[in-house]
Length: 379
Ligand SMILES: NC(=O)c1ccc[n+]([C@@H]2O[C@H](COP(=O)([O-])OP(=O)(O)OC[C@H]3O[C@@H](n4cnc5c(N)ncnc54)[C@H](O)[C@@H]3O)[C@@H](O)[C@H]2O)c1
Ligand SMILES: N[C@@H](CCC(=O)N[C@@H](CSCO)C(=O)NCC(=O)O)C(=O)O
Ligand SMILES: [Zn+2]
Ligand SMILES: [Zn+2]
Image (cartoon, rainbow, N blue to C red):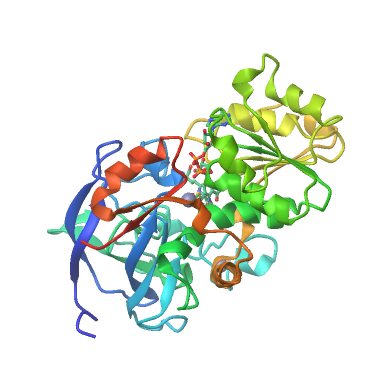
């Protein structure tokens, strides 16, 4: 292939500093080294976590960097020793790696992988602790080991899932983060049983995927909570059966829910990233068994609290990353489920723009009508 082994200059959206509009730059992308894969990104969506890091509140945020972690593309070239993918394969980059060999992967207890995390947390590749992105010699850092707001990116081989080439990349890019996170929070982390009463705080993409997962798990009631009442109509299509807007109640929201459910819900999910809501989500759970799962990402310095009595009396507090899915083995399975129409994906896409319009896409994220905005990376 003509570009193999060469530096590729392509367009990427660079975050030079927190909150400053991203700028489309000509970026040099170095060839993949041993154990690395260079991917031509065709479609990338925006997730709330990109906005979080861009805001400067992420303790791991490094600038300048190329954000983005919910995407799909085609392998352009591979470095030495890479056996799991080859040029031409259709892939989804995975911010949560899966090496299959580390203490985490072998434990059978978690989807977290330790192999490349120390590098991806500081914006570099593992082999030489350097970035593959630069602009005229100036280093641009990676983000979450994915950096998908670029026409080309370099990822570790343990951070890329090979998928069915029949899958439309402009849709299945969503299976890189938000949708699996919500579904997996229900199926893998909480393990919701048929007949359960579920509360979902925050009805963005992640919260709606929780509702979808809870419906498929046979939940009897799915209570959606959001401060934006406009979210409620859409939420019905994802399985939400009842709605509560906390702004319309004087009592604390946990009390409202406890009163409505004969003592509390079986499972609750916080899909916002607000630590006061995390407390409410725990405290609306039923005494003796209610389990609350934290999905939302809260800013540096934020802490959760509750009376320990809440846990002494049987409530359980948990969290989830990527919905507990093992990325390289299960993302292809999720793609197949989508192709068999067993899970929704298209329904979460409310907007389509181009990489050049990325700042508009971030503006849209903060408007109530936007779930996922998919960007094509055509120049
Ligand atoms: N743990 C993970 O692996 C993982 C993966 C993806 C996203 N996330 C996190 O999940 C969260 C949700 O992501 P998203 O993309 O769905 O975001 P989003 O912004 O689309 O949705 C958040 C929703 O919460 C609502 N909301 C805000 N404040 C509220 C409050 N006080 N009470 C009730 N509702 C409130 C908003 O109106 C919105 O509908 C973010 O924090 C994101 O960073 C975590
Ligand atoms: N750097 C952040 C971490 C934020 C975080 O928790 N990220 C989630 C994925 S969010 C995707 O939208 C995650 O997978 N966490 C596990 C991990 O990062 O290994 C912070 O420090 O706040
Ligand atoms: Zn995300
Ligand atoms: Zn591992």
